[in-house]
Length: 290
Image (cartoon, rainbow, N blue to C red; front, top):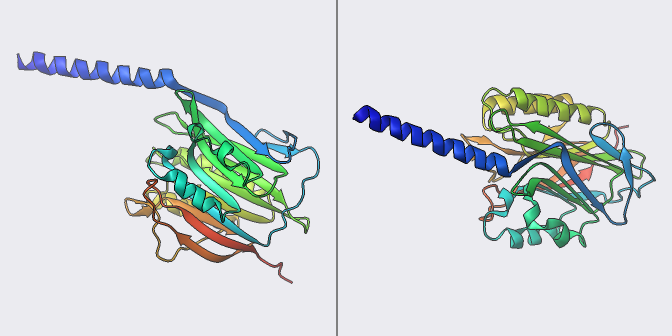
């Protein structure tokens, strides 16, 4: 009798699990290539440059600011109360907002189009017809934008990264990369692949870089890999006094790396409106060495 009961329970659990997986799969849409939506004001036109990037068809006004205020924040898909008020407050002083786990349901483009002439949304999947991914807002127009995904090995749900390139008055350019890296993988094979692909794009760019986001660096191996590949590209990690960044198993998940820029101020802000606390950094362009 006991074995029959156990068999019934196990059968019921298997049926429930199969039904749950089927329900998720039925409501899940994977984007290959990633869904990419770019809005600019004034309207710019772009054409494919390669498999990852599109380039402006006409010259774009150069970025003229000398100081840049950058917000980096995983928004937890807007699932927590108060995110609207916090983001509106942060937007008042930001030149760039690099958001992870941004959802179409949040209607961020409509809310911030008047404050930010450029908005780039990139998503690897949609659940119940609502896409979520990385969203970048900028006070300046790009002359190129890119997006790529890395697939979660078990869940098969892609994580996405995006990039925007901004021309500078001195003939150089600034590359801003917004990342959300693969999470559910113990040995970081897909993680390394996604990170390496991103670093290859950075290697093609010879001037200033901001690389930031949720790196899901929850063990020492992942963090060592990030820091090693970043160092190869001349990227320097931003340090935070009174560091309130989210940790998992004692490891920091969110990071900012820069090249060709000097950190004037860096801080984290405690919030209740997401499981991640936002990162702030104030940067200035590093004068060329003579």
